[in-house]
Image 1 (cartoon, one colour):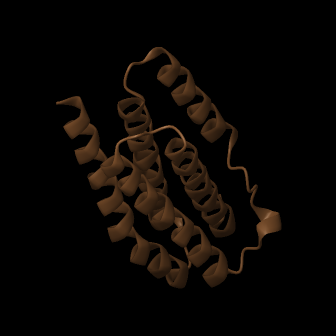
Image 2 (cartoon, rainbow, N blue to C red):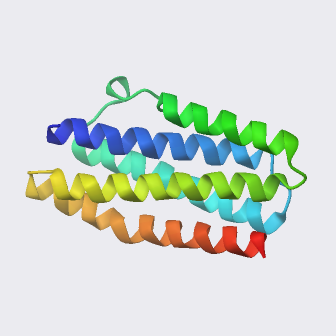
Length: 145
């Protein structure tokens, strides 16, 4: 995949993630979980805006609804929440998996991208995305305890 294709993929996965955070906010009740989800969703939207602006990728080249797999993950989480007694735990668990996917996708893009300028931009986002991943993993563990 070329550099532009790889970047569009990162944006698509971040879009999936941002959309999922927004959706989960409609379902969770715990104030702490809501605060974390709000912050995480904003970080994903910031990443999307930054990559689009810096790399000159317009809205027309990336589906604003995300990917099919992202839609399926949201539907799966909704289904799990319907049969679970703890919506917060279900959504946090699924969002943590989404963080795994975004982090892996970003790392892959850094490894596979040829343009050093683009690699530097992607690397500048890596610490924040890794921190988000770790925060969601910690939140998931605290809800499972």
